[in-house]
Amino acid sequence: MSKEFKHFETKLIHSGEPEPRINGAVSMPIFQSANFEYAGEASYHDLKYIRLNNTPNHIVLHQKLAALENAEAALVTASGMAAISTSLLTILSSGDHLLAQDTLYGGTHSLITKDLVSYGISYDFIDGDRPETWQEKLKPNTKAIYVESMTNPLLQVADLHSVVQFAKSHDLISLIDNTFPSPYNFRAVDFGFDISLHSCTKYLNGHSDIVGGAVIGSCKLIEKITHKLNHLGGSMDPHTCFLLHRGIKTLAVRMKHQNDSTGKIAQFLQLHSKITKVNYPGLESSSGHQRARELFDGFSGMLSFELSGGLEAAEQFMKNTTLPIIAPSLGGVETLLTIPAITSHAGMTREDRQQLGIKDGLIRMSVGIEATEEIIDDFKQALSS
Ligand SMILES: *Cc1c(COP(=O)(O)O)cnc(C)c1O
Image (cartoon, rainbow, N blue to C red):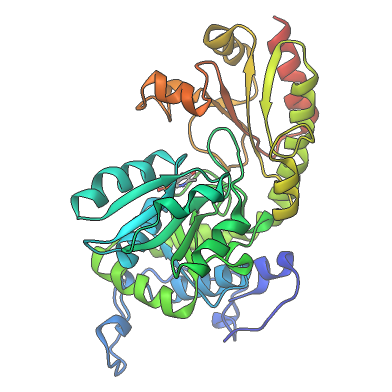
């Protein structure tokens, strides 16, 4: 077991690091070796091999990620979707039933409604805001409940207290996709969730240069999920482990800036005459503000907004901006803009989008770590021309 550290910022740097340092190396070296000499390991899962998720680069990351959410254990995976799919396939078998929030990340939505169904796993969607309606969806074979900390792209926050309580009182395993707040703003396992899932592609790595995922939870659950991952094969390679490890160390400095900057940009947008709506739980006027304040230490770097003039005005605005990059994904150091209706949510019918409140001209923004004033100045000119 590695040393314990008190503050989140310190854990990012020091938790889980090898002791003693390997040949004195200050930075964790990359062990670019697929296999390792046999050392008398008794079980298949303990043989040292990259796919078995137990090389020195994996172990250090597992210890660090567990420390960040005050959890017993963690596991890194080849992508966020590998973390999500491997966890769900560990917990659910043919004949089981899942309750899932009705506003999921697109990949997760398809996994649950198409892939899991083809394996004999059924589901019902729940409204994260209305705990009183969950009981009627419960079945004798319900095994788990799955939610996200903040929804995409409207940044709504479900009643997470009730999710944890409901899971405990009905003996369900609770899973949360905690990608959007990142462990800096919300430690889901510490809060009471059984499993916290991350796309490390986003804030944890923070540099838009790898794809990776993480599962954080109890030793018992993480061991089971690791054994499933050993078979399914969605393991992270050592070089990606190294990049993720390096990225994680600056999570606090990045996220602090992003929390702060996004709050200022949201306020600017809210006061601008050409902006008709801003979705950001950090705004006092937002319907989810009180709940988000109670749950999170910060409101993260994601927001979305609508312009008067709909899709056409949104496309013109995006063309007029010079600083943000027009690209999908999120959580990196550079500011990104997308229009969900024609990118991430294009697979849905227009009617379904409207029902969820995703207008054609809605713009989603991932705020980077550039100077806040420079982003706001660029938006000012883009809105005035
Ligand atoms: C990106 C994302 C995922 C999927 O992660 P990948 O690393 O792309 O596989 C899952 N959930 C959320 C909330 C995401 O933003």
